[in-house]
Image (cartoon, rainbow, N blue to C red):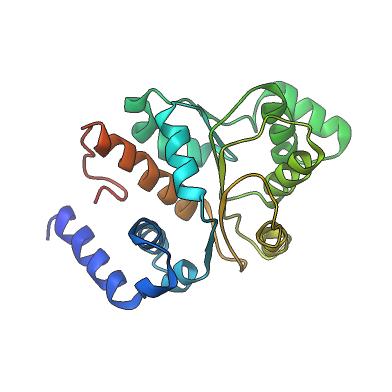
Length: 220
């Protein structure tokens, strides 16, 4: 069986079990399909909370060529081949020397300090968080305090049993949070589903511009 056929059959299975009626439109549904495909977890896809302006805001940011800010190097590696044809920079600051030094000095995580530094320095478009709950918590805090450039949208899918579900629920319950978001309400998550969501969005813009998507993660 060739890789295209494997991917096609995987999507067919997911669509058989993932109900369309729990999503607003086809874009939200297909985004959820990609997330289920990346994790083999249809229940994760069912638990997604998608802000009504998330897809629109994300696509607008990508079309403008704004940088994508990610929490870990794994996410940067997963996205770079999809973003580079669009001329979009992927920023991962968790290993930056100033981030490492100041995080140690202040007794905080490098992920939290990376958010503080990057969003305090310049404008970014899409934020992708699939690993670090403290990354997302810091983003929520500095956005609410007005101490940063506002990202255009955020994929908020940190994974884990400590803090991850709490911070995602905190985000989902904020009625007036100024950044459209994609999240879920459980400890489930991770870099693979976060990256798959971003790839889905990047591929929509690539397709619109006539840039083909070669076989790979979520090429369909």
